[in-house]
Length: 99
Image (cartoon, rainbow, N blue to C red; front, top):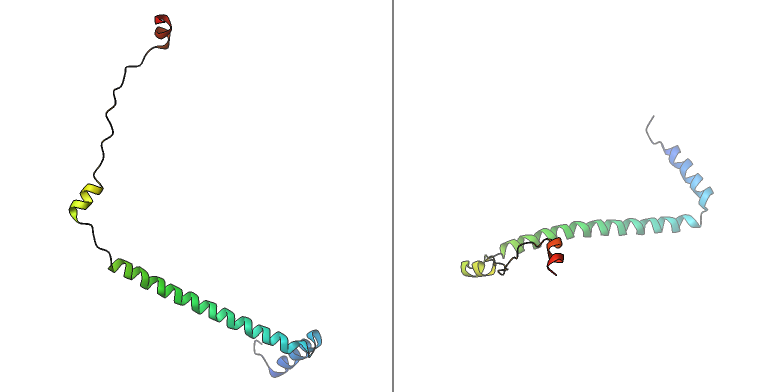
């Protein structure tokens, strides 16, 4: 039942010729071929980009060198905040009475 027989193909060709006309079928086939070539080239370039990205990441990892210990200590040494003197809180009611 699922087999495609030669008369099925013949009927399909006749229907296509009746729908689109004999003049437009070659143009449609040509544009379909161009579209398929573009899709194939884009998928290939995506695959190549993935391979190149992996190679670049591997090169970046290989070029990694840690900082010398002195530089790392100086650069990342925690800085102490400036010393501030804190006054005790003042009651607003007491402040009004004093003035």
